[in-house]
Structures are given as structure tokens and as C-alpha cells.
Image 1 (cartoon, rainbow, N blue to C red):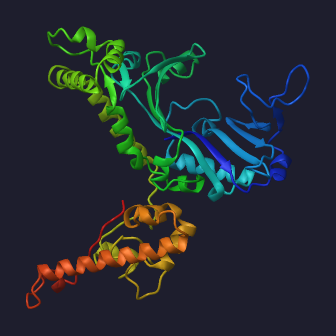
Image 2: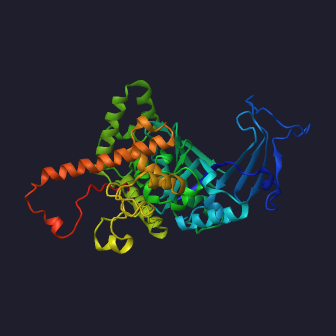
Image 3: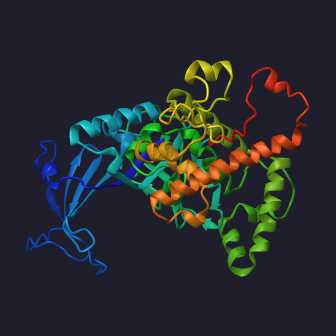
Length: 431
């Protein structure tokens, strides 16, 4: 589920935003004694003055003009999940359909151009109901990779852990405790939230997600591997281990692991981590593994509730009854499997016209094609050069597949697949 988001509203009319009756802007960072705008923060770092306004859980900011942004800059931040719930909470499910409703509402109320709403930060997370106390789970999360967790408490209502990396943060919440104290759910309810907060967009962009319009087709399955990988990257002490070993008294102490990293080489840390995981695998209930299964089930549940596959992303084998019923013959690229109905009727490969279409109208798919068929050598070249090289590589992929088939079949040999009118293709789906 998408929660917190930070976007830049590129090319947005500042005057129209100031005139919007739903917003009331005031300058942020006024000196309470003099009324002057603060130009430096308490650490002496220079800051750009801005006006800001809240709408529900969302905050609009209008920054004054700078050399980098001579016309000013508009940003929008906040929790889409809490906005959907009218600011109350984010412990329930927030499906892709719910998010599309939010984006539609924001577009109508604030005239947002979703294509030009560039994502600068985003949180992807989910809530699960563990069978063991969430507090105990959090207490036994020792490190993420080699980074220590910072335990934090908010407003006396709950607790969470956070581990910081250069491109992202890992966050775990006791959502049950937080919302029980707020009177929103019954006492004894267990809700654990696991979240990845992307502070840099490299990994998110690699999935073809650049702006709010790309979130219209959001699918939790795209983040399934990332979420499970980061959960498994937690150094977790399983308190159900039943084994007599001297190391156990050290293994449940985060300071022991931090000490290994400081005093020894990383190989010593890896060696003891492997021993702990061996003990968990053979002598415990494997709590971390069970939670991993709950995460998998929740991702699949969310995907079922808010399926976002579009016709362009739905890959089917060609010359099958399903394909012919949906699209007619030869209307998907024989290499990528992507819809090419915007191209000429005789085309059977994704070509320059189709590539330009996807670049303009469904940029996410265009980026997926680039990741698979464009060499890094060309990624910084002008668009037309990239399209030229993409088409060249798709043609080569198809030709190489035909050569391979020719080697497999003697020219006098009967090909059974041809007898039943099934194309021999080099179909290589992107998703």
C-alpha cells in the first residue's frame, strides 16, 4: 500500500493554487519576535522561504523563486492512506482502487496534472495481524542488514523501529498499540506494519514509477520481492529457540552484533549470523518465516482487492483462443508481448511508432521496455536515438529467435506447431 508521498508539481500555476478556496496559505518560518522570514535554520543552514497550507493530511508548499527554480516551486506531501480515511488512521487496508479514488479527487479539487506530479519520495507498506505479540516481534528485530534499529515512540501512543540506509528506510510499527490508545480498535488487537520508505527514487523508477499517473496502475506485486527481501534482511532473534548453546545469551543482544562489526571483520559477523539462522531453522518455530508468509498473503490479498492490470500490461500467448478473442491476430509484439494496435496492421514487432506512443501515454511501460532491451550505453542519449536502438534490439531479438528455430528444425522436417497454426515466436514478456 502507498502511504506517505512527496511530489513536485512541475509547471503548476502558483496563482491558481493561491486562489483555490480550499487552501489558506501562510508563510512558514516567521520569526515570532520580528515577523521577519527565517532564511537559516537553527543549525545555520540556508533555507528557502515558503508558504504552506494544509488540506486534510496533505501539505502544499510554495517556495520562493531561486536560481534553480526561477518561477518558484510547488510541492505536495502527506499520507494518501490517512487522507482516504479523512485523517483518522492508516491501520486498515488501502487498496489500489482506493488510491485511484484519492488521485481522482485530488485531480478534481486542485486541478493536478498527474503526469507532471513528479514523485520525490514514497512509502510502500502493509499491515498484518501476527499471532504473537507485536511488541515481542519488534523487541527481537536487532539489525537490518548491518544497520541498527532506532527505537522511537510517538505521543505516548505507540512504538516503532527505523533503520536508515542511503536510499531508503525500513520501518516497523506497533499499529495495534497506537490505535488502541486512541480508542479506535479493541484492546488485544495485534497489528504490525512493515514499511519501506524510499528517500531516493532509483529503485522505484526502475519499476517504471515516476509520477502520480503511474500510480493509477499501481500493483503491490511489483514490490513483493523487495518487501520480502527487506523483511528477511532483518537480523531476528527467535525467542522460541530450544537449544543448549553458549552463544544464545549473546545472540539476543544487539550490542553483541554491533560489537562484532566494530571489533572484527564482517566475516565474523556473517559467520555468527549464519549460526543463528541455522538454530532458527532447526530448533525454533521460525517466527520470522511465519511473518514472511503473512506478508505474502497480505500482498496477494491487496492485489486481489485492487487489481490494476491494463490491456497493455496483460501478456497472453499469441494465436491462442484467448489472444484472438481479445486482440485479433498479430496485434501484439512477437518479442515483448506488448499491444501494438496503434501501429500499422502488417506490423508484428514493437516499432518506433509504438515506442513513441508508450513514451508519451504510458511511460511506465516504455521504461520497462528500456530496462530489458536498451543497453546502458544509450540511456543518456536523446529520445529518438533511444527509440532507434530499442527497435534495433527488438528486431535482433526476433531474428536471433528465428535463427535458433531454423537450427532446431530441418527444412524438410514437419513442424507440428505449424500444423496446428501456432506461431513459433520468441515471446519474452516484460512482466
